[in-house]
Amino acid sequence: MKKLDVYIMKQIMTGFLLVALSLMAMLWLTQSLRFVEMVTDKGLPVYLFVEMTSLLMPRVFSILSPIALFVAVMFVYNRLITDSELVVMKAVGISSVVIARAAIIIGLVLALFNVFVLNIGIPAAEEKFRDLEYEVKNSFSKMMLREGAFTSFKNNMTIFIDKFDSDGVATGILVSDGKNPRQKEVTVAERGMLEYTEEGPKILLKNGTRQVMDKKSGQFSSMTFDDYVVDFGDVSVARKKDKSVRERSISELFEEAGKPGVSEKNALSFKAEAHRRILAPWFNLVFALLACTGLLIANFNRRGQGKVITISILAMVAVQALDMTYANLARKYGWMVILMYVNCFLPLLVAGGLLLKTPVFRRRRAKEIDNEI
Image (cartoon, one colour):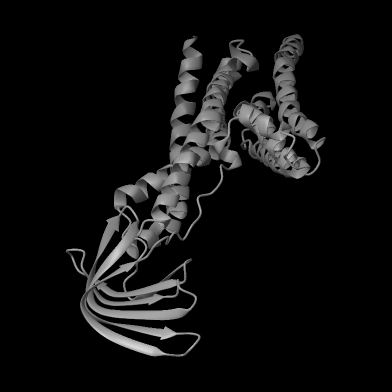
């Protein structure tokens, strides 16, 4: 590999890492706000909080990677122009394709890495996140029972706990049991302890009162107790979600789309997601070329390259917007997949063609200047 390529690649990678990590940190903070309540109110362990929020990062990286590379490439090549390094390179006969080779190599490397992230990393992370989310939402503990609040379960049971002591003992307990449709039970106790058995979670109550009312006859009874056990039975508050689209590989998506029992709407969604997985990594290379092509083919301007940078940014935004639009429409209209491929590879061909033509133009212009002199 040429020293020039290594020199430019180091700068691009440094800029890419700074931009990507900064954007990922910002998005991590915004995404983590959804789980702050689980830590502050439900006692979710910090390590589990970090693990759940970290599992969202592969998806975030796949989205930010092309944009971060675009910013890094544009910054590096614009700096080369500002420092007159690019002018010197062209003056010694280095073509635009050679100068752009560093950006192309990094774009290809990130494209290959995103193939792994999109098809292995994200499905594994999404599956792990789904399992953790289900475990947290259905864990019968302080994560579910909040101090000073009524917690209702799907089996018509409601529990109120005034406070949790440091040793795990709950004080000020009220349990409303409506599992039996014929009667209503309300149990109040000074304190209690959660226990877990093979039949499900139970709570051992101490020093309380149990009141029962027969709904049909209206008969009311009350009793006091020293020890009493309340069986919560099935208190799941969340059903484990089915395997989502993001958890499937490309082969699984096409396989699901081809099953006879799948509706046309779902089949189109599976196919659109599969084609998006195929195309998404290539946008790293596309955006890298969009960032450097304009700066390499434009004439040097001492006032800066503001117009070229603006056009490059608008081109990147247009490609990104069209990709999102076509991907959404492809879930309804299958033929839109063709436009997804056109939107990805047409800018790649145009940028590559412009870079290949530029050296010929430069040589002709140099001959014209020599003749004039």
